Length: 90
Image 1 (cartoon, rainbow, N blue to C red):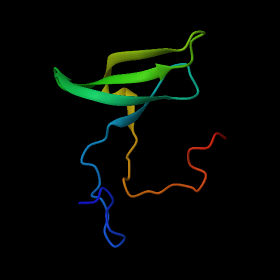
Image 2 (cartoon, one colour; image 1 turned 90 degrees about the vertical axis):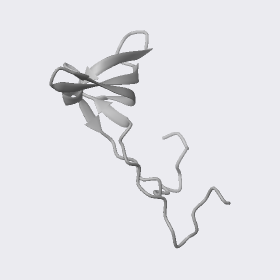
Image 3 (cartoon, one colour; image 1 turned 30 degrees about the vertical axis):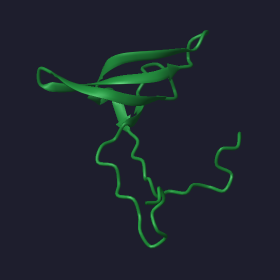
Image 4 (tube, helix red, strand yellow; image 1 turned 180 degrees about the vertical axis):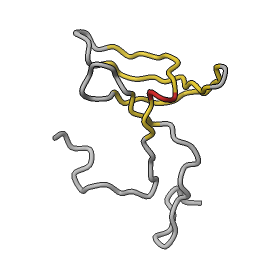
């Protein structure tokens, strides 16, 4: 069995979104994050997110429970091949 789908076939889309952008109050650009887990707090949902906080003087990796309202989902298409210069620094 091959790890690559045939050319006339495609991988099914992922059922859930794990990559997110995190809205940061007072910052122009959101941070990129990865959802590790979900929990319900009362009537709202929270996600355990890990992200690289590069806005500080000394960038650090953070992990915390964030409200779903602070997250922007980033869907991933497993069939996207990307531009030809993928992986090269810009």
